[in-house]
Image (cartoon, rainbow, N blue to C red; front, side, top):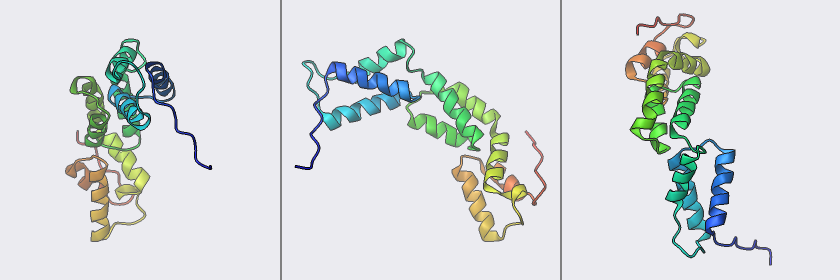
Length: 174
């Protein structure tokens, strides 16, 4: 017998402890925590007398301040912007994390306000446009534009940065 023993099914108490441990270790949103708890219930099963209610547990943790979607959205948007990602990528990441429009609006507005600086950081990190060693050939230019678009920047911003000559940072026109 070399296999591991199966983990016992979850109870209300073990689910609560698991949720507290998770929010203690990771910054998370309500949606991500709920997905995590549903996955654990699916993996291990449920042994409690009443049906599993992870939604109520997540709401209780939010009431206590352990889970804050606004703070998570602001932190995530700021982190992505610092790494050079655009407003579209930030909005998509927040949507995937289960952040609602109301909770995510300030973070989205902040990422839109920092879009030019994020594009600058992205170009610098990827050595694109003004940070490249030499002007790109047409195929390399297309790759750079695609990289900007995948990072969540608009086509206009991507073209301005990609078409900038090495050593000449484009002027902000916003």
